[in-house]
Image (cartoon, rainbow, N blue to C red):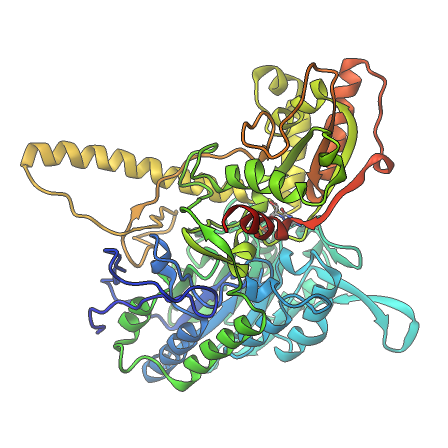
Length: 632
Ligand SMILES: Nc1ccn([C@@H]2O[C@H](COP(=O)(O)O)[C@@H](O)[C@H]2O)c(=O)n1
């Protein structure tokens, strides 16, 4: 069993190492051993480059401070345990390994993002992996998955419904559309179980030219699909980048169940960044294991004697593990001295070297405080969304900007989903810049939009106001559907956080009443995720107190901000302004402005030709330029 030490998450090559333990910070250890079955699975998803662990001291970051090297050692030790128990232990990943930290996004210009960090995933003994939507935003990234990453996994990198167009090897004047990885895999586990595995991506429509995602509904009608599932294995292993609740897993599940009514089906999903578990019937379980290497999912199943030909409920267990050394040591029965091996530490060292090569600890300035996406209200001084749109964008885009110099007022708009992680007090490094805002979106603009129109765009985007709601309900519903298909799941993650916080507040009220009645003191636990899902028993491996949560709008604007670098010299609704937006939301902005112009009877219609490049800074460079200007 683990000793009671804590591991300081020093910024490993990513920033200032001068962090101390004297802040009253601690990590809580798990208290319950895992329930092993005949077949057991460790699951990662939506890792987004978080391979050096979460290294900040503000709670709940220390909960997730284990590095990918620590995780590698954990997997290794767990595999040894499985062997001793003569049971199977599989390791799976559900995709989205790009976009999220300096390791995945900070490679020098002209190189391929994620290529170097992917080499570290290759060092782990994954049994199957699936492609995510973040592998499909940039063609070169997808091509790298096809030509490098997939080859390493020898048929186990799964892209059942995802293709890439590449030159035809037999005739280079022609192109062919081929799966990025494999459509399916059949293999035997160490204990001899026959597995049929698929890797399914949700109905993503935001894929880059040269790639393609087939809707799940169509995929299950394919001849190859029928042939792949025809023969009965001991279990179906569905690994995919698709939420386990309220998405299309039932389509795949039902297609299999028609042929194999009782064969065990284990589903490992992702994309929504939440911890979640659903059982579609008594012989299946579907698990989603969070995001950003904050969670490692665990599932175990005890088969009945007849395995696939049995028909009663199977015994499943699931657990969401916080990714820190205490967790890893607890479940492997090791301690600080016996846990680490050369294998894991060489992975961590390699990642630290990569961080050094990419100069990820380059310091832009000193952040005066923590800025959070949802633990502070929006707008507020502690909101990273306020910081980004009201301070950083206006200040960074004012640098070498003739339009600002000429005094042309500008309204800046972005989607709040473009901001992916909190900013912490202290050294603000290149890595921090890329974790907070990893996308390489351009800033586009429409000029001469009258303020009266520009001023309404944000509210329409966010569907505020009963009038707008009535007018735009159908359009909004369609846009929400469209946004979901383009990958937007912030609303699911936020709803999850909101509900856990609401439960926490209710629980705290009850506790307070009990405490007053009994004169007892509360049990204080560390902050973190508090999961309620629809599977039996408690899912979280380590009990926590839920994090504070404040809801945020889907879109944010610098409009009416007193702190913008370019004060709006607006005298009336007809004052012409520049409407500046990230290219990711261009279609929506253009459509909304045209609708508003039509409603106003102005007769103005904007087309793509009216859209210009506002500044050559990309959205992932804004915070760095801002920090150099404001935090130095
Ligand atoms: N160029 C881009 C691409 C994506 N986004 C945001 O990310 C969301 C998708 O990320 P998931 O991890 O949820 O798959 C997408 O909805 C956008 O909010 C972006 O801003 N720019």
